[in-house]
Image (cartoon, rainbow, N blue to C red; front, side, top):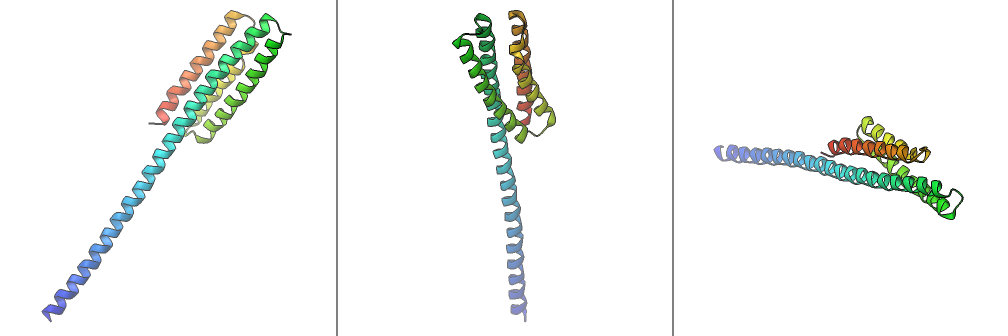
Length: 155
């Protein structure tokens, strides 16, 4: 009888140990999946935010070029090409803004991106070189604010 009881205790202990091990492995696996998903989201955000910053920087440069070419000779082919290039860059920046809106974790970050985009879009409306410079500086500062907020979102 002692032998049967010992064997039964051994079987129950083995089954219990196996069940506990399975539970720990399942929890560890779930934790690993969550960690991997968080890392992927962080990586995706880093890519999207940096792509937006690059696109907006190019858009700002294009807007400045557009303004200068228009003021040199508004009817020239160079002015037309600068305007066309600014429109192309605006499309790229707008696409990057949409990606920010899709992946951002906070409305504040989306608002900062929208503000930077809007300020950059308004640059060609400057009346003179000083106003263009001021608008460009405002757009750059808004982009820097976005980058600060984005940095905290990818931590």
